[in-house]
Length: 356
Image (cartoon, rainbow, N blue to C red; front, top):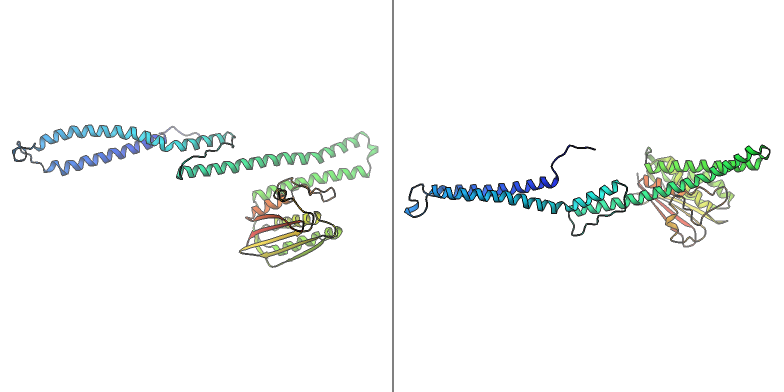
């Protein structure tokens, strides 16, 4: 945005300081004039014939007052310029950091030394913003690179299969079509997951009353055949847990959590889903049995494309965005997601949403 030229902040502060000094000096001189000179006699011999008269003191005082006003103007301008420069020095550092950030350099930090004041508070807030921006940009770049890599694999497989079929149509059989269908299905699932993740991060959805316990029962009913197929016991309990949000997105959250708990389980294991109101919040807890998870692995499970040691090669391998979508949707609903390994093995996932 282009603006017309004007006085700098340092010049404005200098003129303000100088104006205050000049006005203060002028007030003092006027007070001296009215409360000292006005009481002197206006006789040629002055007071009792010895002291100077009013005319003589007025002439002498007028010269001194003129010199004093010139000195006050010079002192006000020079002192105001130096003082304004010292006061605005932290602002120049903040401006330089903002200019570097506008050019794409987010690694720079201001870190103003000294005790707390307005400028240092602004510096600390700006450093925090730069740190969050740098982290967010880094996450977006890694996400874009991972998404490109994940999409490239099924698309490359589809391209290879199509090239093979075009070169030799006689080799087109059911197995080739099944492989092509699997690759296409994976690309479509990944695209839909990316769109859902983007929708959750934008927070563009209609909010309406939702009961988490009913959402949990609906998700469990949908996934019950999968649990029976894998020999996993699915238990859903809970109380009326009212919140506000998107029923579709919250259903996807619970579905992803329950599906992960079923798929990443052991034969004969169990999955427990419980919803309840708790301290002005609605809590949904999903636990499953399974192997012991390293504590340093659990916090990374909610990152996009971070499957850790939970990779599967069957039909429910997923695209590595299940918990990332859950985290995004929960955060868009002003909630919190907590992942914790169970002492007996498996994972405990807790979702906290504001109560309605």
